[in-house]
Length: 402
Picture 1 (cartoon, rainbow, N blue to C red):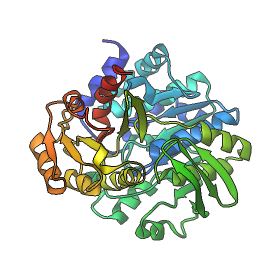
Picture 2: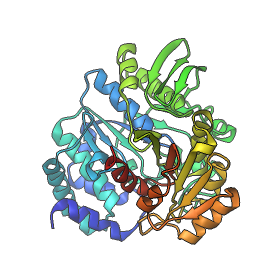
Picture 3: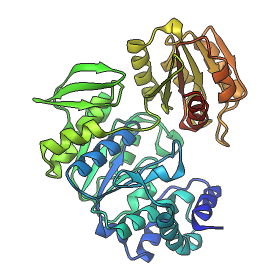
């Protein structure tokens, strides 16, 4: 078994919170994290987008950048990128092999070994900046094992993973705030009032200059942030706020306006309001998997799609708020087709169907995403959402028809 396969096998150890195992691996590897300028991104929604914006801004400024994000959407290696491209398999293999020497003995999980391996790979490749996205929470997340950071960034916060992070917004704020360790922090303005109150007075920078949308459609957006105009290609009402987070981050890093503008415009992200058109139909693939994210998707649908021309394929994982997710998108489509994700964590189909029936008169189910897509040929628009885990099968089905 090669090192990459061995790391994946460690996922059978399940989820463990705490940083001690990752710290032990990094110490044994002679602390590669100390040689990197780490930007640590936490939050409930928007982490992936903000990480991508920051990565592209740094690249536009001529920096070398490593980016570690999860989960994978379409391919394992896309989680580990150097200068915007997936890392070479042989490079990741070498880094994981080194991390595995110490991971087994300390009982590390797959994600903990991946975190340490990614950091080692970035150091070995000689990158200057490492943009590292939290897996879950912040304080006790494996990625928080790093010993020093340039910046912490906290995107929008909502109720999620309550069994691990707490059942109130304040408890979750404490977990997210744990990424702020002897470094400046940028906080998204897209927050509930309770979250804004928690972070006020904590010597953080809020990305809260006025935002004015000049143009917004499925091809991108133009907006004013403060007095400056920016263009982004990502759709969705939350994206200007995510971009604002990246703008404030770049300013704290001393990056100039030209690189900020170019980086924002270059940023693209798979599985977030990703649109593919083929054979007269328009498909939207979106990994939204909690009520706040589903609410943002609902806004996008209401603004850009006619309900009677639109169907939705919806799956959900068992540890998510199935009913809350469906409630957030109620009234947006003519028909919803429930599917059980092909994943050990997938919610039972009967639970998904039951939730859908509470909010959609036209509800049916399918045995797979592909079969569900076969049943949407009468619609001009098809939305696939609820979990990242159903997007790969959907994209493969769509690409066969391009």
